[in-house]
Length: 289
Ligand SMILES: [Mg+2]
Image (cartoon, rainbow, N blue to C red):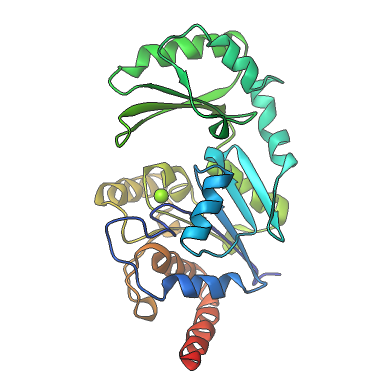
């Protein structure tokens, strides 16, 4: 069905208004009504694990999605009647990168490295090995040492180093190379039959850039930081698909373009027929009042 739509969105500071900018009061209500449409398949794309995904949905009263790409892209949950089932086909897709090895195997190879402290069990899964490390180290040597051991076993992995400034700690995720948010979105498109023209991705920050600038139809919400906006623009221009990135400006149905208002604005920009879905929802709401 060509009117069917796949809407994939980051959560924190994209659909969740947990940033400094104000949220338009009706934005999440419109998102909810949109999610009720049978034509819309909704996917959340986040670094969060299942419990934290569920917590965000509850705390911010978000619609339950059809799928959630979680754990930094290592899990795709298929959600039906409130049941969250990890989608086995996705594990089959990413497992070959680790050549039959699991997190426990990799963990054993790194057991002697004193700088690394394992993160909590709920932050680990078969294809995600996550450590804390001191925030003040120069990570290059550590990463090189890990890389050598992975190479020796012919394991293809991404090593993702970041700093949690609030907790003042370094974070290290070791994942199969193919376990990215972008690849997970493309996998869903392919397996659930959504074409390029039917799919929109929304995000706000640096870790969304690969998907925002990949050539997928994508929207950067207005509350994004300026440096993210500049980098995103530069990258899509360099890749020659600037038409695929939309920067939310505000003004759709009087909303400000931040968070879910920006997501909806981008959706309407790429797929104008969805405006009628929002207008239906918005008139109905006024009638209710
Ligand atoms: Mg975000």
